Image 1: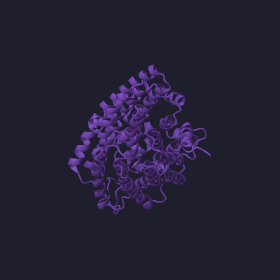
Image 2: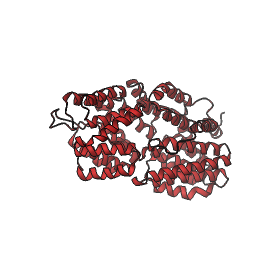
Image 3: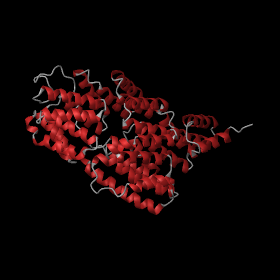
Image 4: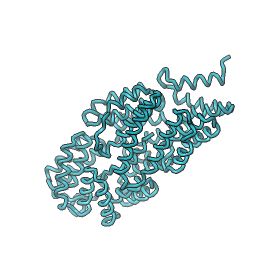
Length: 498
């Protein structure tokens, strides 16, 4: 339910991928560098990073900084790569060195370094100030155009972000990774067909890279084409067996289709990589999501409790992890009927959300996200207390006001439809379900809910259609899945055996 927090997170990262370069002379380089050898190593490091080979990227970028100790952009990129490998202390020292000598670079580079340093210190206010300085100084600089696109994305202005990305492609058609970013903007707009086209172009231009297949798989996943999604995630892992993004996305797709054992196995197989890269929090987050989706409430509570207490000063980078720890813990207790524990957990979750909202207020665009999450929680608590109508109006308004894409709204629409069913309003529940299914026809949970709503109304044919869609999507689900058993029982009631 909180998946949008991470995607819209206020954590900024300067995108330093090179936007095409016609030569290696000092006059044509896009970075300030005094050494041909250092520049060559830098380009090699970027290429390895683009291919998601972090160890190779790290070595090449470190070589670049050793060959030219004042090559600040190589230092910034090295710091980012080191952080991704779990080498935080090294990353901090390299970034501090870049910050100390940033004035040797161009004015744009100096500001980019300063902004990266500010964000690493969780100083988002200063980061935003520098962003505005960069836009004023060099609005059409390719790096600045990327930052402008990123800021438009934060504000959920995906069409404006697309304009900036198209401007980059006009000046550099070889910047093929822009097709990837465009694909995600179309996903944000809920335009799945256009997203898939953009990401298919990305995969065409970089067939031997894992990331295009992972991104294309995400588009298929959000559109409800689960088998195609899993094929792309598997293909990405064949290209790069330690590509954690595809492992987690594959686990998500397996979980959605009820294959929780395979999902857990997928994550377990890459546990050593998560550990090596200091990403165990990410692993625990995905395990928590799977337990929640499986409605395994004792396991949900156990995983969440194992992550507590959270640090008082949690970096913004870890926000989704922190939210899910509190949220899953709250919902676990609530679904187990332990209302007192659930209320206490909700209080901690509310405090956490308030803290994060204050931290990221400088960016805007977050109020609607927080409100829709709070409205969903109020609705769920009201249902558990036996008064399901209490939260319906607020949740309906929050959904209507949201700019989220259909796949991000799915869990909120499901909560609304469940509340409507609980208040004996099946026609309204079916209407809410159909709004989502128009965009994602195979969404399993919503198909099952729609089937129950139509069944309550006595409309046999649409109920059967949704039931069959649900059971087709879930045909490989783990044996004993309670929702599949519920759907099967309902189908047998409606189509009794001779």
